[in-house]
Length: 271
Image (cartoon, rainbow, N blue to C red):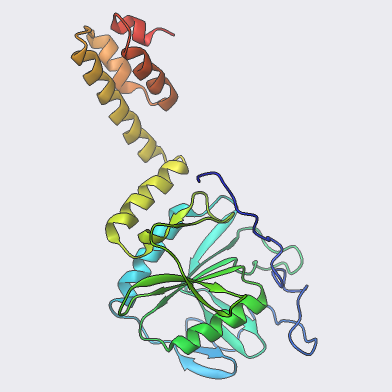
């Protein structure tokens, strides 16, 4: 339900970089203190193992492009989205997600960026064991929610379950609700192009995007004129212009309700 927010624990362990410690009591290293050279090498390190992060090809590349396209307009104010952001996950792990969301303001405890709260990973040719190990290490670091979009064979979207230490399949008819998101993100939009476009339009509308709002107002105005014509209520040129120039959605809705019973266009537009 839109507006409903599940009771997520926003105090994710290790989110500040100080509150959690590694096994043996060692502190986590800073998020941006890297074992590899970002944007210079193609390496990632998972549990001390050096893994070459190869450039993507279809279907991984196209699915990642869609992921970024869909995710961006869903992000709530106060949060930032990023692609391929590399994070020092623990002492011997340094790797990137495909897309992530984290708080915009600097972490007051470290003076640097916050840890990711939502992480998305597209899985195609990668070894699923590596993806699972990444999820285990990210969750231990404090990432609240981790999603995987599996694109080979039977395409599906899964969320990491810390309780079962495994991937939980998400129903295509469901939505991802989270405080990081302005509106729920439809799971189907991560796999289907038509659903992706619809989700983007709905998210932009919820964010108050002026272009979307203007088009919505224009559609309501045209519908109102059709109703007035169907009821044989004369509309003067100045009244028509007033209707078409109106970009107040609440006012247009009010006029539309009046149009059902009004005896003249002036009665509809009276304020």
